[in-house]
Length: 165
Image (tube, rainbow, N blue to C red; front, side):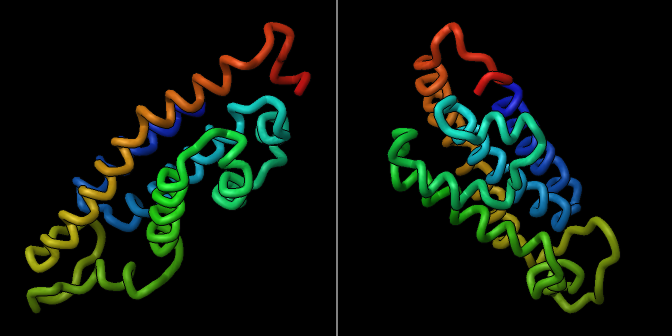
């Protein structure tokens, strides 16, 4: 429940940052959203080692997408869903490091100078639309995410405890 709630909270926070013109921070947070989705799914199967390592603070979230691909069949995930998460993480990874994409955020596309901090550039409206569509598209899979987690957790026995597995 905490992981699903956290994923939703991060997505909403990313959209808020984006709408306030903090595009780089919003993109960086979206990378965390994709990794949190993967962690949530991995932790929903108590027979896998991810819940205990995540709860113990030893799991590296940067590995979550790769691990999700490895265990997608066991978790009964659709290939296209896993591919969408991987594609989103790959795209938003560019916001986590200095790249041409992060540099472009500071340059006006309509030739009116450069920006420092939060900004709106009328020359980037099409890119903004794509960003919003990406976030909304990822939000659309949240129902499937929650259903997959519920289905996996439903297989847990009453004797299973987070600390025990």
